[in-house]
Image: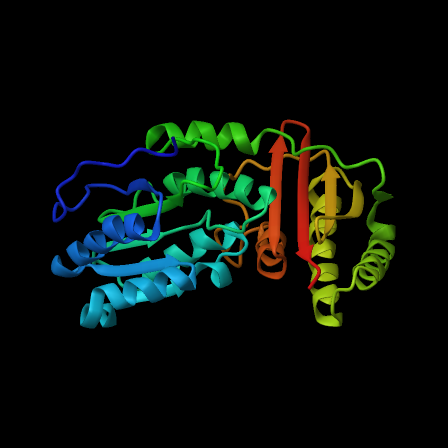
Length: 300
């Protein structure tokens, strides 16, 4: 189940990115496995980061006592609600401490996530092995509650092939009751207006409706520029979320699109990056003759 844990000695630095996992069945079981892992990192002089739900952070602070002051605690439910934001988060942390070994503990599949979010967590886990394949002295341990149903996935060299397969597989179909609109350059403004109206009708605040409108505009503009000049936008309500889907006939080769900030001189890529910052969840799939981006914004 999930990805298998490694057997490296605690103080032996990995020669390459080391990505492991453990499953826990209770609070006590979680602490029994997590606390020694953090202690070992502190003892080895590593940068130690815990990106967990705040409830776990609170428990570990008490368990670690004074040593907790040397651990960077992050609320993953706030910073990583959209799993596509997590690779940039780890990259930023690595860049802030160049040359210093880093040990991370994370729970991306925390309890309470939706089915769509858990699907993206699996892709995120696979893509971490792609994003950090050259990150020496970085180990990441991910915790999973036994009660959370997550698809099994690989790590290491096999992860890239599995990430490619997932990335190239279309998302579930747009429901029949969804509103649809074909668009080209001339219809971009109309798409924005209709999506904003749908967002407000769904109960989104003005700011969140505007964020979704901007994200959708960026993705639709990408369809016009890189997807054959036209696309199809769809939107519908599902499980408390307004979902906007954009499909075209383009192809994206970069598996990490939207998870690495593109350089200023690069053509393309910023639209997906921006959408990841503005939406609660972004799903992206692309194959030989299709690209589909699905934006989720929770009504709250």
